[in-house]
Length: 224
Image (cartoon, rainbow, N blue to C red):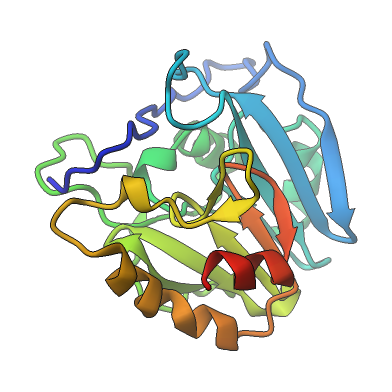
């Protein structure tokens, strides 16, 4: 199992019982970043004081009028049920330890769940369709390498949006590449070099699941 210096999210919430709504105890405010791009935050149930990432983590929904994509969802807003029923809907994870409410939500909505490969030796992998860097999902998402083999950067060309998990985060200083989270056997400069092709994409928005939405300028600074 790949090791890292940071404490990962490790939660996979159970599917809801009949009539129970995921995230019912927390009602996040939803921000429409721009038309069809929705952002909300919720407190992570595994967070403790001193954890290297903030208590509030971000989730996103992209709606292009035909397809609804949910990324790393936690405590999803209840009105997503209605929208999901009107769209071709899918859930996509940036990494398997960001499962959050994804499994229960996929079952509840009856939609596919796409997930990067599990950590080596994981006996309880997230159930879903596994995808890897370099693959194009049938829901219009292309996977690029991140800072670990199963922490991927997701490109949604139709929306000109890049979704990032742990590869780029905001710890109060703006979007950054967390060099102290990189495995000890890998040089951060090597990973940064591998991330440079992201700058060739016509990115308009970067959606950080540890942080919030950022513009292209923030991406360029983070990868400089």
